[in-house]
Length: 379
Ligand SMILES: NC(=O)c1ccc[n+]([C@@H]2O[C@H](COP(=O)([O-])OP(=O)(O)OC[C@H]3O[C@@H](n4cnc5c(N)ncnc54)[C@H](O)[C@@H]3O)[C@@H](O)[C@H]2O)c1
Ligand SMILES: [Zn+2]
View 1 (tube, rainbow, N blue to C red):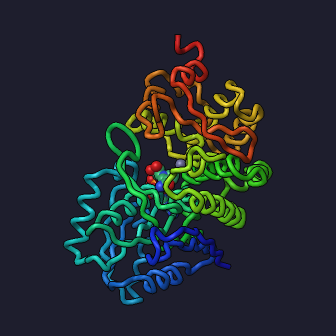
View 2: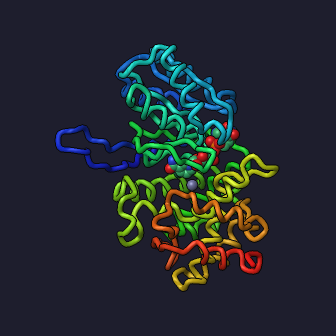
View 3: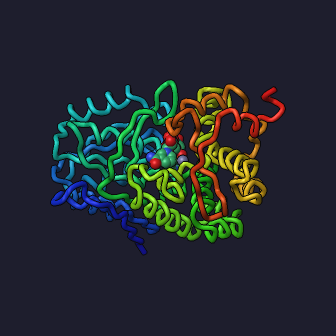
């Protein structure tokens, strides 16, 4: 049974098109034919672009491409190397150039078939290609299905940090074929579970309890449980995005869209610092560690739920996620928080959790972060 969730968005000005869109959550075999039909219905030109990465090109692209071709679409596919390094301006240029040579024009749409890397890159390319063409997200990792494919944040990395160049560009629709999760490596499944934990902590304690109840089955990839988790997570993300699409309401109670950055202040610093080293962290692994950091900061400042850190430390390993924050965090890594774009006026806007199921944005002095998180190491 396909679930349809709506991301409700206002039109930018009167008489412009409704930008609301659907997230399709399809747990059944043969999803590629239904997905291809949705793409064909929305395609104004029969030549479309498709971005994917090497792994997904081997596993899922053939049946998706065949289904699209069967509906009369000419698919210009660009395969990028796996991993964060493809989120670069250089890749944007290469993909756009291939699309031009493949015959895409302003009426063409782009399909992003893959995890968060392909989704962020594909969305960004679509937003700037010929000054902007529509795109469809087809997320194939748990992380992309529960988080990155929804909400229209696109972007690439710079040497100085993650996601520092990007756009808001909402997709025409998101089509999550849940059968793709059966090929996902355990580590990537765990990485996606971290963002589900995040959604539970900031917005839905019942979702967190569900994970605590069934952590081992989630980690083992139980399809019915994953389908439920994807639905509940997408509902939370859709709701938050609908209230604050462009992350402008950070001063509102709860922090608006910025609350979704829970765990990401320190998480992004750890992720960037580990990239290119001997043990790079997956995005969700870094977020897991960043959530522990935020829980500790909240408790020490008297602004966060005092039970949160212990609850995270108990749950995360059961989901295959790391908890060794103290071993991984050092002064130079914490310095990277300084280039985080969420920084404002010398202070770092950090998402804290006053009560599980609720978030709040608090400005923190960077030196306080160091004192709390590095303790003796800092001196
Ligand atoms: N835009 C947003 O709102 C948002 C939100 C959260 C995260 N992100 C971004 O998402 C990225 C992380 O996404 P990710 O964890 O999906 O990483 P990813 O896209 O690199 O995918 C992880 C790995 O899984 C492989 N893979 C993908 N689908 C597969 C499948 N079905 N079977 C087997 N292997 C498969 C990929 O080839 C890759 O090697 C980061 O760059 C992060 O910044 C963006
Ligand atoms: Zn994230």
